[in-house]
Length: 321
Image (tube, rainbow, N blue to C red; front, side, top):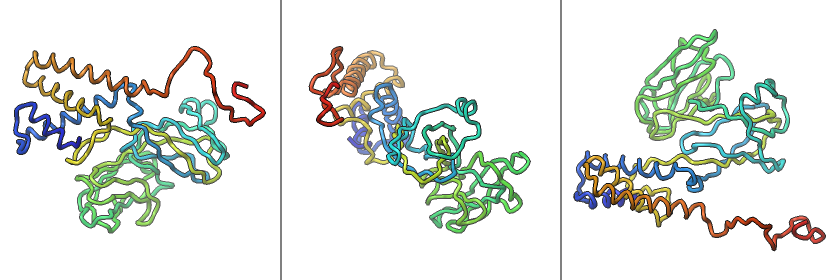
């Protein structure tokens, strides 16, 4: 079921024309369907519908890393096959207590460092530049952050498309960027650079966005070499916008989104009898989806040891030894 199909189905249920929706009504239906979709997917036990995998490479002597928060709600675990390791999750408090000055070596742990508007901070006191992959990006870019001495400053500039331009020629000593955003949605990919065009990229705004957000984390020990890591992530719930977008649900349960959206619409129209009837239907569908996800037929917990297990240790080590 596409996003447009869901809007049309909701319109028919509400007694509206499904071909020519009023603009305000269409906007409300889209918001309601997105709210219902998000409410269904964020419930505990629904995480398997949002699993994803992303890879990144370490850099020698670099301890901090970042993944774009758009599309990634949480990092579940990190592994790497070069040294056959699953990284251990640790907290910033643990790092501060056990290893405030990390040594260089083979990483075995990862530590979350929160959300940030940049994936890399300036390597030294720097002038900051911005450019785009599209000549149509002529809106205003803004940054905020600290300069040498710990003073908080802001800077802005009207972009010149693909030509890099400084955020402020009078501020050449930014040492920490806290915010980066645009006055209008990006037409191309907008990048923030240290020192000049071609300098170290600090942040990136995707097409259609007005601000970036990155999930940052630290590897411990600090990597001594380039290694490819695999991050198992929980994807963020996508916002439906295009008519051809589809729900992140099994096909047999897509109608649950429409049911829940209609339930939300009934609250506005104050129809308690129909609301009560539809609520029972939503609860039944929600329970069926939960069972479908957590009660996989190949997952059969048992109190007794399982028989017919296979050993991975070779012919001289039978199963169960």
